Length: 299
Image (tube, rainbow, N blue to C red):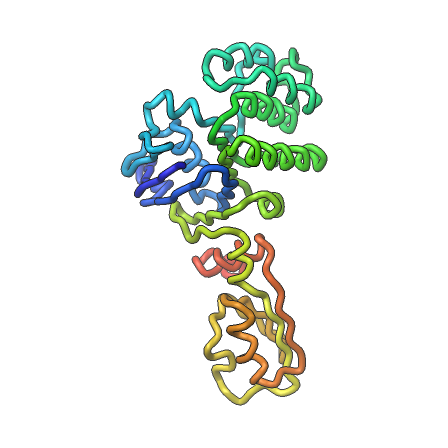
């Protein structure tokens, strides 16, 4: 289990992560989403022990993480731009990792080298962005980490490899009880993979929910009227997140279940009404709009 307690990280006057608290259970896949500069990458570097917190603490299985080689040995971080030396190959990097990571598995290493079609002896810096990510994944998965931290891991991967990676991560979690934390803007990929989503903005956590309950809590609703109700506050009693009107047609994002808001809407005698769950991307847009990050205001 990872326990994040009142975590703060500053870079000069910039507060990258602000009084952040989160508990992450073992064997879960957590998605970190948020606006650009929201603190996702900084949080991953804190969780991997690369950065030292200015305030607060991180505990991995009850042990303080920073400056603790044993705790760090249970974690592996793949950054947005994986770093390799000029002469690094998969084989000579594996030679180093065998001595650094206590859970290194030669069997896993050989297996992933077969799965990902990469020349083990080729210089990694000469590879494409997607191939470099695959090289980083081979090495990461071969360390058999208890906690795998991935920053924009789907970026640069073709659709076949993205599908392969999701299957591998699901297998990893189910067979090894590995905890995976993924920061990504690719919400469609996270929607298929994650158990829980953590939404960040300006270093703060806006919300943290399991995906199933998140889908149940928000609905996109279209309501059309032949004649508008006389009441000025047409939708009183409904928890509206966003509303857009085109004539007598209303497109509304509502927080709540259909059992809660449908009786109120039906009492208005609409000509047409339809309610659907939101995609993860629509949830992101709605919640960020509520935090003042609204594309309509920006434009």
